[in-house]
Structures are given as C-alpha cells and as structure tokens.
Image (tube, rainbow over all chains, first blue to last red; front, side, top):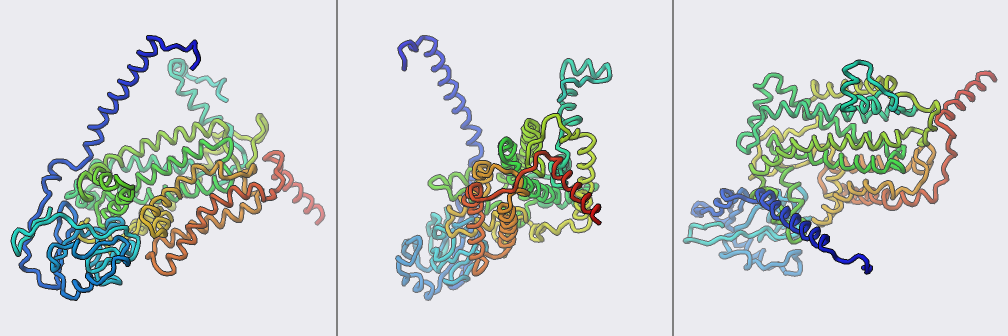
Length: 170
Length: 416
C-alpha cells in the first residue's frame, strides 16, 4: 500500500456497505436453496413396520421405505456360511458379515446399487448374491460389493426387531 | 454495415428514431455481408434456430395438458396421445424434435471442427456454443424424464446418482436434488419447471452466439479471412436466406418422415410402461444422442472417475481453441488433421455404438480404447499437429480456388 492511498471515512463506508449487502444476499439465498431439501411430509414417512411370518428360508421380499426398495432376505444356512468364510482382504469395501446383520438369518438392506442407483437382481451374479443389470456390479450373499463399478456394499438401513416376527425399518 | 439504413415508411422512421429495432434487424439480417462460398454445412445454424423455436412452441402447448406429478404424469401423457386434439402429433413433433435438434447440432459442431471455425477470432462463439450444448443436454434429459415411464424414471435415477459420486457431500447433494430419499414427485416437479425455463436461456445464448458471430463474420470453407470491401461477400438476404430455407425444407422432409412414419424409432419401448421404483428394466440405455458419453462413463471401473471423465469429455471442447495450435483453420489445407478429423468422428460413432451395448467383455475393452483415443485426440494430437503438420498453401482470396479451377478446366477443354 502506498502512503497516499490512506484509508478514508469514505472507503470504510464502501467496504461496510458492500459487506452487509453480500452477507444479506447470502442469507436470503438460503431459503431458496433449502426449499429443495426433503420436506416435512417426506420426512414423516421415515419408518415402516414389516411382518416377517410368511417368509421362509431362501425367500426374500422387497418393501418400499422412503421411496427406496428394501430387501429382506431370510438366508439359508449355506448362504450364511458362504458370507462368513470370505476373507476381508478380498473385499473392496471390507466389512464382516456379523456387522451387517442383527440376526444372521435376516439380511435387511437397501436394494439400491451403490453405483448409480439401479435395483440389483437377487440370487444372480458371480457370487450368488445380487447383480446389478445396469452397469454390472456383483454383490455376495451378504450384499457386499465384490466386482464391478459400485464403490460400496449395499447400505444397511436402521432397523429394530420389535418381536421375533416384526421388524421396524427406519 | 447498416449505418446508412433508414426505414422507408413514416411510422418506421418515427419508431426507429425512438427505438432502433429496425436498424438492428437490418444490420444483422438483410445486407449482412456473408462469404460467398459457404456450403450446405453452413445451413445448420438456421436449422437449429428453427428447431429451438419448434421445441418451444410445441412444448408450450404440451405444457397446457401435462401434469407434473408422479401419480398423474404418465396418464396425462397418454391423455395427450389419445384425447387431446392433435396431441399425438404435437408430442411426436416435440419428442422427435429433440432428436432432430441433436442431429443438427452434431453436424453443426462437426462442421466447426472440420473448418476450424472455433479458432481465433471466433473462440467466444465456440465457447458460447459449448454452453448452449450443455444446456441442450440438461434440457433434453429433463424432458425425457417428464413422461414418467420406466426409462424416464431410471434415467433420472442413474443421472441424479452421478452427483452421489461427489466426495463428502454426495449424499446430501442427491437428497437435495431429489427433495426426498429417492427419485419421486418432488424431482419430477422441479424437472418440469427447469425443462420449461432452460430453452429460454438457450434462446438468450443463441442471441449472444449470433451477436458474437456477427463481429468477425462467418468463417468459410477455405478458412481464410474475407477481404473487406471485395467481392468475397454477398448480402445475407436474399442469397443465404434462400439457401437456408431450401436446406430447412429438406431437413423438414426427414423430420416429417420420423414424425409420421416412425415416431417411436428413436425412443425406447420400455418408456410406455409406467415408472416402477421397484423394478429396473433389464437393459437401460439413454437416448441415442447421449450414447457416446454414456460409453465413456461406463468405460471407467471407478464411480467418481467415470463421472469426471464423462464431464471432461464435454468440458474439454471449451478449451479446443487453445488446444489446437495450428494457425490454419480449414481442414482442406491440413492433410494430416483431415485424416484425424475423420478418425475422431469414427471414434465418436464407435463410442455411440458401444454405449448401446452391455458393458462387459470385448465391448468394455474396445470402449476403454475408444475413450482413451477421444482424449488423445484433444490433448495430444490437436496440440502436436500444429507443430508437425506441413499445411498446403492457402489461397489469397476465397475467389482464387474457384477461379483457378475454372482456368484449369478451360485449359483442358482447349487442349481437347
């Protein structure tokens, strides 16, 4: 800064006015951005209860939770064994089968491919788990990504078993 | 060019003195000096303007009958097709019009690439053009979602999920876009709003595009500057007005052929099935005009990497004026570039084909090679050619090649 460009009362006023105008505009922009976020009615549909009685081992159902499909699979003992014997080093997104289930028989996960959001097909693919037809991601019997472009395992939603035959998702 | 323009009528004079609209129009349309050697590849600017207006007009009337709600969108489109007077025709014009517009824009861009129209002093025209292309992509994608068929729904899902590749904020960003936790009604409504808005932004950019064009004037097949005040130019009206109209009529014959004989040829049958969030179709493909970019997305085994590469494949176009180091514009005088130009076109068509196939095995390997070549073309070949290529001598004026050709032909007839 050269000496002759001293800070005057005028430059102080310019800077303060400009700063307030900028801060004010930024604050006002927020409602216009936030209106696009999930609204109260969408958030209100956050949990779903499911009756598990009709599902036999080796069967699965798909339910809609928050507009997304959720797979509920009653796994066979072979599938559980297969999921348990996988070494963590073989996994792109390492996670133990125990960390993905509350009860090994019931695998509950969001049925949305972690690549670009398609719905994987059940009991297909190289690992006898799920296979996404859109871009070829293979998931194993624990819903973990094994091969293909998807970066992560199928997401596990929050859920609690209300009793032996009822689960509450969300 | 229009300094001496004066409206002939008294009302015209009165109006023009207060708001010089007539002078503006006269300066940019009627006597606007245009190189006299423009070929039919130069008619696509006019064709595109027509397409844009046609899309806006048909879109406006379709919007009078369409309902942007997940429960009613699909049936409202069927209502347009079956009940609304001429609804089938208006919708087929609008849907095929998007395809025709992309067909025209790809030819328009290829013409720029071939004749070097993006080079100094026309860089800004080209860059504005790239932005128009980006807006066209966004607009057509959102429009494709509106009928809320299976392909609409899953296209929306896959494309909005691209944003989930953004590190850290990916998930909140997609939820913000969706207005929920999955693709649904809120997204459909906002896509409809934006689909309505964007064509007007495109229109504004088209005005800037033409304005920027009218500063240096048109490039031409020889790629050399016209000599001011010479006989190199002809007035835009009537010469190019008539030529553009003729080309447009031929284009409209093809357009009408699609609309009236094969209106669903370029679409996908699955889009006549209502959107079902619980079932992804066996084989999802985007519209034909996105296939090359889709192939690039799938060629990369990494999610974020694929998204970055796909975005770069379009963004790289904006830097072309500086990636191309050659001073010579037209490929007519660039023997090496001419060959690489056609190789590049072949590469894009190959990528388009691969985008329509399943991405595994041999197809995936070829897609990776073709993707690599796409970027090599821009990042290696274009900068390098300017240094290694021996270009042919440029003519002194745009009349010279024509005159010398006539002379040669005159001599040969004499010798016979």
